Amino acid sequence: MRDLYPSDLARLDRDALEAAVQQRAQCAYLGHGITLARVLTRYKLLLHTADRGFACHVMMDGYWEIWLTQFFARAIKPGMYVVDVGANYGYYTHLFADIVTSAGHVLAVEPNPAAADLLRQSVLLNGFNAQVRIVETALGATQGDSAQLFVPHGEPKNAHLSTAPFGEGTFHTVPLTTLDHLVGLDRVDLVKIDAEGAEEDVIAGMRDTLHQHKPALILEFNTGRGNDPAALLDNLSSLYGGITFVDFDGSPTLVDRETVLTTRVGEDWMLYFAPTPT
Image (cartoon, rainbow, N blue to C red; front, side):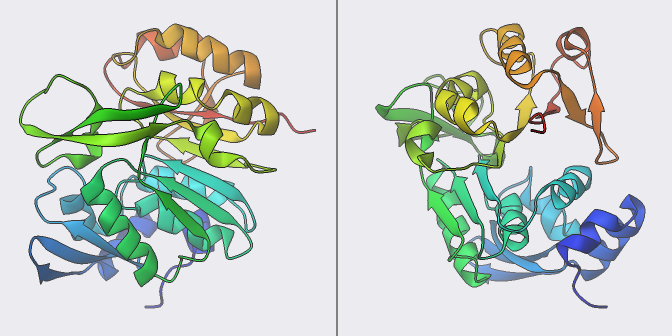
């Protein structure tokens, strides 16, 4: 069976895609707690074997959030400028880089030093270094010197800015900046944000990017996190003119404000704010 291209990810039925990817899934232990996994039949991803929340699933299945994977495969086009906030080991970074080609660009932002290190190695391994820029920093509302990042043991994808530990984990002092400061380009086409509770500050720190470029925005949103989730929704709705979310079939679906705020409380929504065609 040949490798699947992003166009295959976009067109295949979800069940058929999962089966095809699982058939090609494999991993090789490299020692020192690092494994190399074949992802989406096509990419080679370096992962920490102690990661029980993300890496173990990818090692066994070869994919992560297949519904969101398919959404991105359909939404992103060659030549786009895409930002991956909370890139982790680079599952989506690699997919984005493959789709945009060398004519486009991916900015991958990841504050966790251990994840960022493997991300850099994987990008080089897959030959995407020409179109991917990796920045090891946290994002916030204002330009700052540093922040405290808490990385839970076994769950690095849940790393978050905090000064109080929740369970067992490790603190890292990391740089802090804004997305506006990092971008500074003529265009931004799509921004994916998975910031584990820092969404309000990340959005506040990309005000110029939102108003100047109005990129498509994919935002992991949880009413149990943040200071004022309702205000965040209102801010983005006023800018984009409505709210949609990515459903489990990979399609954007309209949803109203109250449903997002009052249902699935404590669970994540993957909200999608699409720019109005001009």
